[in-house]
Image (cartoon, rainbow, N blue to C red; front, top):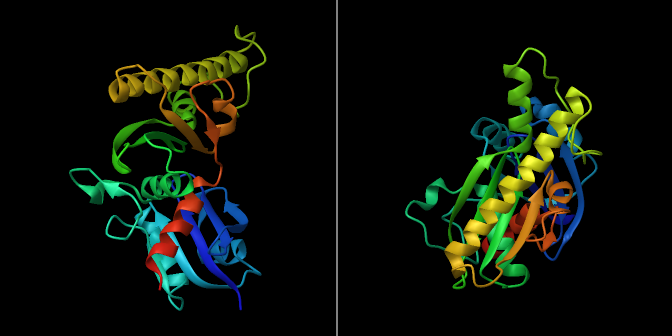
Length: 250
């Protein structure tokens, strides 16, 4: 008998896969560019894995349809607001909440129940999602992702290069690249700090810290110098998909 689940987190930048038991993730893999996903790359990404059921959280409709076709022979579950999530949705139109954000909320409540809580997901967009003291998803904030900002500068200016994101070695850049890198990383941390400060003011009147966790591609790099972020969970979304699978599969 194989593992309980194949979990798929299909996002705009990249797509992550996990072979998973009911209690924990067993192994993870990724396709670095979601735009390149086709039947062959999906099969290669999951080669050698043996599993019983497939669970998908997708924010890319065209690729989600491809994934449904590839795994049409398996018991298949897709994360939506209509499923049992283990967290209430105190939101005007739950159908507009991304599947990854639903999974993040489900994971936080199931893991610890330490609420209220803010989840920062560093993806193509950076999202801030708020789970209230009543264990309800109440909304959030969406801002451009770090790569979106740097790629935009490269694409819209004649002389600014495309840069790889890493920790700057100097604040005052001595080259175009180092100046861009400093602006991107330090500036982006400033954006994160300000939004988190405003969220705490909204939630508590600024009287106390609200537990904040991070996930996504640049979570470790950026969180390292943001004291308000208490923990980084690289596989938070996949773990949330696993939790939702347990709640909905018989």
